Image (cartoon, rainbow over all chains, first blue to last red; front, side, top):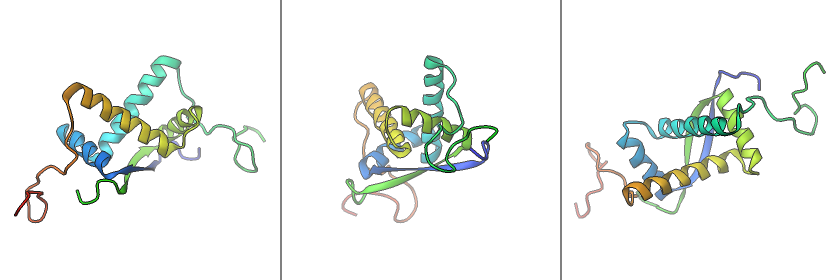
Length: 73
Length: 73
């Protein structure tokens, strides 16, 4: 993770019906579609952390050149 | 709503830390980031519908020319 505070995008593929329902739910709480899903994600992370403790916000170690985040190497 | 079954995208802006945490959660359940958020969205819609009944999957009526979905006009 290079820029923890930088805004990044997540793109999700859904069918048209799901998007329409979500847009309806978002509108009901005066949020944009993107804002609503962001709210959903943040609430989910809070819940998960309440259950299992802090979730690391660094990239998991991955095999392959240049993908790891081992400090001091 | 023109194509209810067509795949559409939702783009969500989040900070890098949130994306990294979400990627970790996604990996833990062997899902892609996009698949994980889609799963989250579908579960949320199911919950909302269990609480308040079916959510319409048509666009809400909006003011302004060409935005409404009034049938027969």
